[in-house]
Length: 380
Image (cartoon, rainbow, N blue to C red; front, side):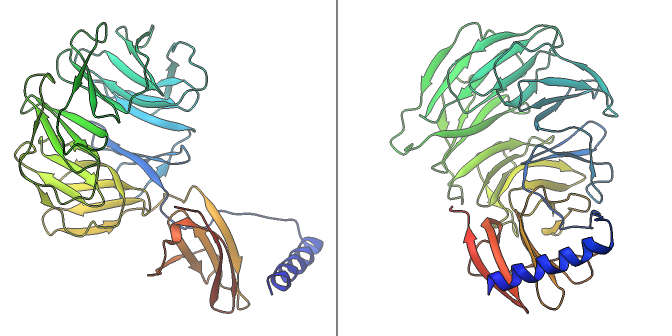
């Protein structure tokens, strides 16, 4: 039956090409890409990065997103003048102004084709960048760089002074108090810590560091990372993937759900309506939380009424795994965000919901009349 469908499509295609020139045009969807990061600048504009390295910008709190003319983006940060630093997959960091006009390429030492996984700008304008397992530092606005760490690690974060904290999967923490010239290893001795430390952050309001572990355990350090204390309150998460702190110094633990702490990380509540969205990064604007999702694009959460909406207008999916048309002209597409269908030649798309499997892992299907036959899925 699949061969008959393919033959029919090839016949229609050959018939069309015989009488007209092939013309392709972009449709209005499916919206929502697989996103890896979201951030806001000092003007309140939102930026999000897709898994495929595209960068989108919204100037109206996520109502409409515009794709920016930069590619292979992995990391983004803003300096005190709201200039934008963008790191890509080829060991390059570029400087743009606040309107995202290109200014210059920063002189990064050759590190092969390493991904620029993370960029942070310290209070004294020092620029820190992570290239795979290398941590490099610039003290002159990117004119020159120095390698300050060489071993494989997961993430880094800095305080308002000169202390750098590095997290490892082994449950060990690297600490430097002199901008990376010297390092010490700090081991957390806790029998409940059975897996690695995923991520952490520095809280400027409480002047302490906070880290989250795969075992859903939170540790806090109030002495610049020398000692770490486990909080007593349990967190209702299966695992903690990331820890983030907003401008009001509220702490968020991201995992299968999102939990929030308003007392520096000592007690936690689960935010309602966010289960199953795979939120991996957040930013807070106007009492709304904007999250980048691995499955549903941009998730907007309203703290006032605890409601969740999708804000993906303009963010086209970065990967269409497969597409097919049934015998009555309905087009179906399998994307990173699930299966979509259109009955009006792509003017409008509707996401289909399936309870028995995760459609974002779908790589191949065929359709006959209104039935969808699953042929292959990505293992997960």
